Image (cartoon, rainbow, N blue to C red; front, top):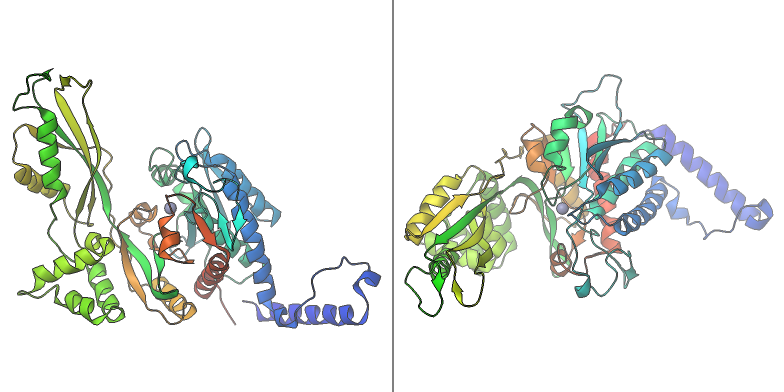
Length: 490
Ligand SMILES: [Zn+2]
């Protein structure tokens, strides 16, 4: 931050206040505004203004329906570009497919860019669809009610998008002395991961946003009893692969059932798979996560977490810890969730084929072939075949837990959330960061809003909403993270 600027602004503000105090505002020909609070004479006053504007941007973005499919991110990309342009920033719309675009903009730190130092602020423009009949408000109305802003994308990920925009514009407005390029990027098709996704964006436009560091969604402020319990800073994520389970038999008249009915074989296979748990192991990040979380839990569960690695009680301890939390369970093993079943053409016909889909989430580095082998042994039925589906995710190396940026995120987040520890976090869900990590970006995930479990569950669900106070706090925290990493103070 340029100290001269701050002093200058403070003097100007003080002078304005003095003038306002001595001459009635109406007499000066200026419109009546809310009374100026002396406590706000500092850069904080500008930060408050940006936060207020960011809420308007978020509401506007919610009103632009970018449910994916089909996405239609181009409209939102144009909106964001318009906001940036008004600030004197030159955005670029990056077209990916008809109606589908990303948008990028850059604040330069020097004439010759150094991509290895650059910081990327990433968020996605698209959202998951809605089931309107289950919402109590218009999902695209950006309704403010009881201290919340409601709407699809309020958290995932338009909240973060508006926060990134606020941080980026704040740097520009304060004319901050940045020590690295700061790049704003809004991606498309994150929820679909298809032909307009970050994969395509990197393939077509990598030079426009190549960076050494990134902050994105993926981690969270985990709350307990209304307070931050810990901050999970995502540095790695699991890998999604789908497997088809196909049972084949002889079709025929339902009045004379046969033993090879594929519906029966498929159901038996799925029942076995549903009861199965893959073996436990601990990637380094997960190990550090559990070490960090142990002192935060009650004595009983802490005892079991500590015992997970012991030869005698390990297995039992892993079971207790897995049963205590679906998140913990999924952090320490590959998971297999049956998600789609299909069979049958008519009530009185035994079909020739029955199929199911298994959504597998691998720990990075685990092999899908091993999972398929284990499941084949478990199902042990020659009438049932497993087929790995194309477009399997690629495992990315984890981001470093030693980088300056990781340390900075942890330090600022912990300080800003009442001293709650910041822990390395491996998300069970996917984000755009995996693709960035595959391109040597040290990408970290932190949605900076303190959200209750109830609010987090509404992501991808009904009545998604963000508390206005959490949004403000998140913009503030993100501003501090980026400022303390990318702005030179002197
Ligand atoms: Zn998201």
